[in-house]
Image 1 (cartoon, rainbow, N blue to C red):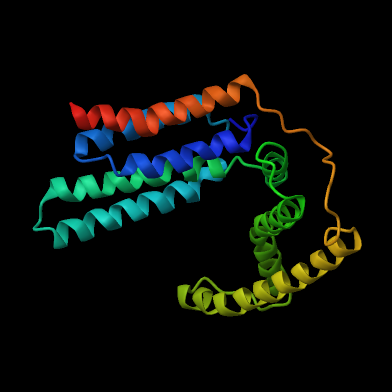
Image 2: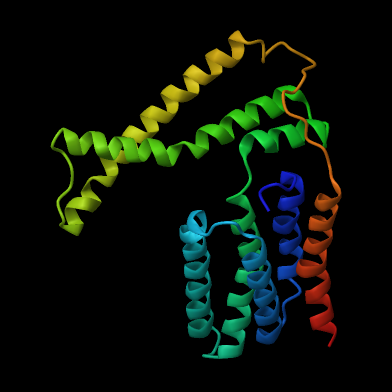
Length: 228
């Protein structure tokens, strides 16, 4: 999966939006999610970056099931269908997003979609900075711990440190954005109208296969299940 073109991987996320509207009963959602699981087992190289993503999607589905059951006349079928739509909608995007490299994504936007180089450069730089927020947050935690400001095992104390850490993360992000904008301006990103790209972004046969599988699984399969 990571070797595929980022645009091909994103097809799963976009087509899943359409497929989620086609889920009309619990069995349809169950079958589509089961197909998702089979594809994930066959294609995902590592599950480590997916743990929190899958937890967030699962939490959203459980929360929606509970609210739909509580407010929908205590009908488990309605609640399960609503939760299944969330899984069908969010699972593909949550999985493929973990394996999209910002630099390769920028190359694909510029070379495959022919988007303006200035926009692609700024967009890729922002995605790169966003990817570094988690690492920056860990560094701030270690710094506070070394200075003796680390939280104890008390959950309340841990929650109290979230505010200062978030503020420090905001300051660091603003400082990094300023430095990045100055560096990009010094390299001519503001005035250049045409650019070359260090890495090619070809569209291969496997990328077409990925797009075909995405359409079949997220759109054609729900349509077939809806008609049966």
